[in-house]
Length: 285
Length: 320
Image 1: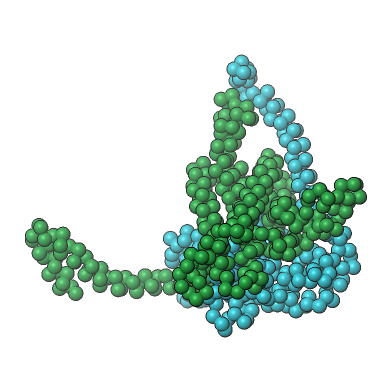
Image 2: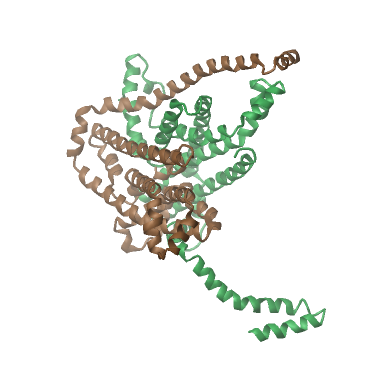
C-alpha cells in the first residue's frame, strides 16, 4: 500500500490515480443508470396503469358526470379567495419584516413552518371546536384556513424574492423621489417581485385545488372530495379525473420550477426545487 | 415622576447599606416612564406585522390551544383525564402503534432508497441534463399525494388493478398471498411514491456539502472508498440523513387523504381515527377523545422536531 502511494507520489500528478477514478466512473455510470431506470419504472408504472385502467372514453365522460362542474367551481372559487387573502396578508408583512424588523425573520420562518409541522387533521379539529357560528356554515372558513396552509410557501417564495433585491436602496430611492409607502409598495416593490408573486400564487392555487383533508372534514365537496365520493359510483371516471387533476397540477408546478430556475440563473443562483417552497404534506394531504 | 427618581436616587448614592433598597425602587420608576413611550414606539415598530400576528393567533394558535384544552375536558367543560386514558388504551393505542410503525417504515425505506438515488445523481457531472430532469421530477412527484395518488395505485395494484391482473395471469395472484393494497403494507407502498422524491430533494444538498477536498485528503492518507465513507463521509452525513428521515416520519404521520381514500377510512391509523370523530362515526359524548388523539399526535411530532433541530445543528457544523 505504502509503496503504491510512494510510486504515485513519484509520478508527479499521479497518472494512475487519474485512471482509477475514470474506471470508477464507468462502474458509476452503470450503477447510475440501473438506479434511475428502476426508479423511473416505479414512478411511471402507476401512471401507465391508471391510463389503461380508465380508458380513453372515461376522460370524455368526466366532464358530464354529476357534481363535476359544481365541485370544480367551488374549488376554483376557494382558490381565488385564498390567493387574494394570502397575498394581501403576506406581501405587506414580509416586506415590512425585511425593511424594518430583519431580526424577526427567523421567528417568521419558524411560525410559517408550523402549518407544515401540525397535521391538518388536528388543526381542523381545533378550528371546528372554536370557529364562530356565522363562519361555520360558509365556505369562507375553508378559505381562511387555506390561507394558513398556504403561509409556508407564500412566505418562502416572497422571502426568497425579497432577499434577491437590494430592498433598502430601492425603497430609499423611491422615498427620496417623493413616493409614499403605498406607492412604493405598488409601483416599486411589486414589479420587482413578479416571479416571487407568481410562484406564491401558483403554489397556493395548486394547494387549494388538491386539498382533501380539511375540505372533506368540513363537509365541503371540493374537486378532490368529489373524486373520492364519485368513486363509489364509477371507479373508471374517478381514475380519469385523478389523472386529469394530476396532469394539470404537474404542468403548473413544472412551469413554476422552470421560471424559478431561469430567474435564479439570471441572478447567478442555483436551481430552484419545489421543496423549498412547497411540500406534499403542506398541500393538506 | 422625575422627582421620584431624583429623590430615591439620592439616598442610594449617600448611604451604602440603603443602596440595594432604593436601587430597585428607582429602577421601575425610570423605565416606568420610558416603558410607556417605549411600548408605544415598540407597538408602532411592529405595527406592520400585527395583522399577521392576529391571523396566526386566531387561525393557528387558538385552534391548537382548543385541542390541548379540550383533551382534558368533558363535554360539559369540567376537567378530566378520561379522554387521555381512552386515547392511550384499546383501539386508539393500537392506532398510535400502527401509525408509528407505518411512519417509521415509510421514513426509513424511502430514506435509504432516496439516498441511493440522490447519490446516483450526485456522482453525475453537475449541469448534466439527466440530473436536471431527476431534480425537477423529484420536485413534482414530492408534491403529489392525496386522493389522485390513491386512485392511481388502486388502478395499478388494487384487487382488479392492472399489475395485479397481470401477475394473476402469470399464476401469482398477490391477493391470494396475503398482499392487499388496503392494508398497512399497501399504504406504505403508496407513500413511497411521494416520500422517495422528498428524500432525494432534502438529502441532495447534504451530499453536495461533502467537500471534494475531504475525499482528496482521505485518499492522500491512503483511504479507499470504504474507509472514506466509514470515517469521513458517513459521520458527516449521518446527522443530515437522520434529520431527513425524521422529516419523512412527520410527513407520513400526518398524512390523511391518501390512507383515507385508499382504505375508505377502515385502516386503524390515528389520523383516520381523528377524522372519524369529525365525520360523526362515533358515539355522541366522546368527541373530546378526538382532541386527546390530536394532542398525542402533536406531542409525537414535537418530539421528532426537537430531535430534528438538534441534528440540524450538528450537521450545520460541517455542511453549509
